[in-house]
Length: 138
Length: 138
DNA sequence: AAATATATACGAAGCGCTTCGTATTTGCAA
DNA sequence: TTGCAAATACGAAGCGCTTCGTATATATTT
Image 1 (spheres, rainbow over the protein chains, first blue to last red):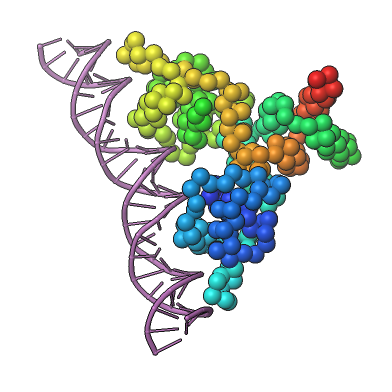
Image 2: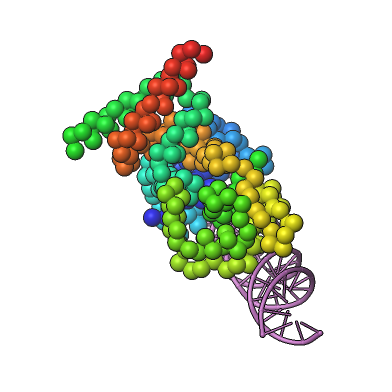
């Protein structure tokens, strides 16, 4: 299980959002400032060169982070792992390095910042109650 | 506001746990396998060289991550920023890069893993209810 | 067909993080 | 005081990530 780097992650985001894409399409989307709801990413100060994206995606193919279809001249790439699975992996690492492995500490810190809306808090609460129920019946 | 790297973070953890320390003391603690409750860190496979720790801490002093008292021959280091503040900074970065800035997504993902104890869930729930009350009165 | 545009492949430089070797200084002991 | 132990300072190598220049192949247009 290999975790993507920051640069790789930005490419994966594009692939997750916009399905199978060519290098050109990915590069365009990285440079164009289209902030999809979930994906809130700041547009780069300096445009990313085409060959930069190409090289990165080639590396990702080597690492197995993406699959590529080379049947046509413009190769078509797809993310190898889903968004959830990837986020879980990154989260695991992060919790380990920054919170000594305690997910609860992380959550408390994340909620403590105080920018969660009432609806979000309600959603989290709902999840907790669901988990508590599962616990009780386990 | 500068965020520590992984290596720097492991040193900060030691300083947070054990107050002002010399390089020697930090290096010893990094190599000795003393897993403090909060700090659950795996002991390194290969011992960390003394000068490695020294250099890293010198860099940290340059960056302002630690303060050092050079009045005695063995310099004494203290963490410049507190644990909470540092974790907040790292969390902010991580949420941005991995969850597109949505703390709620992060929390949902963190809780979804399903290894939180009943007591932990209760603690989180308590915090949420406290936040909801603050919201209501804001 | 020739010229132009667009694709991939590849090597290498730049940068930050980490690690270590080595020189130098300082304190302590024989 | 002479020698040994332990500390700091410093330079540089190694590695991974990112970026880019350039070579080469393949379409497309004129």
